[in-house]
Amino acid sequence: AVDAYQAFVERYRRSPEVPEARLKKAFALLAQFTGTRFDATPILNAKAELEAIQQDFPDLAREQNLSAVIERIDSALARKGLQTADFYVRTHRPRAAGVHLQEVVGSYPNTAEAGRARHRLAQLPPTGREPLPAIESSPPATAPATRPAPGVLGPVQQ
Image (cartoon, rainbow, N blue to C red; front, top):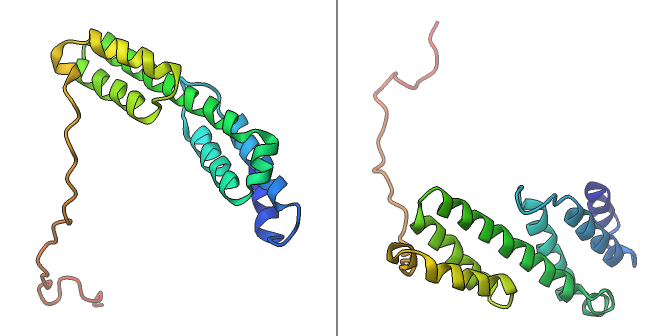
């Protein structure tokens, strides 16, 4: 269904049915999400599409109450983060658990799961509660330009 709706949107860009097709595509993506223990790609794609619909068609978004759907998606993603953190607690990796709990708190602060993440974060040993280090962006290192030796990468000779 996702592919069919996408094909319609691409083929009939000026159709008055495009907003509805995009909405149905987003819900088809959401239907592909099978639970928090599985791949989150469909729900992430659905969230992105719903946010784009909110931006492009605010009246449709209000009519369909898309903000509530996005809140439920955020809650599911936060639950997935909590489950991942629980796995790392069970496998005695408190630092990894702390990273996931901090991610839940930082990315989904308005969810009930964020409160649970804060509580679980407080229960971790000190190494698991350390704040995440800032990631510095540096330009990628470039290798010096080298020329191959003559005949090494040249055409095959017969």
